[in-house]
Length: 127
Image (cartoon, rainbow, N blue to C red; front, top):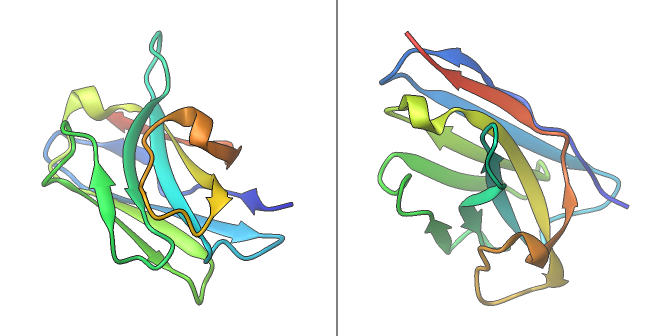
């Protein structure tokens, strides 16, 4: 069983940056796509970004494209989300998650494709 623990969230002013980290323990995640999702108050959890198991392919929600960058370090069993030019509407709890299919070739954006989740890290964007 893999455990994920997100960190790096916090309070940032509009236009600022944060880097979220999600180290995994218990087993390797290097053979799985990894995703970042977020949930704002009163809203459903939504896809933000995903990275293939090799780290060569990425996918982003349109709302974060060009500002967020997902990456992974398989040697460290960790996935990251660099968030730049943050906007108030980016405020949410951010979760990392592990795909439920080994070596999946297509990046999936739905919650149901991921079966292991972290506890989340809060991101607040406010002046």
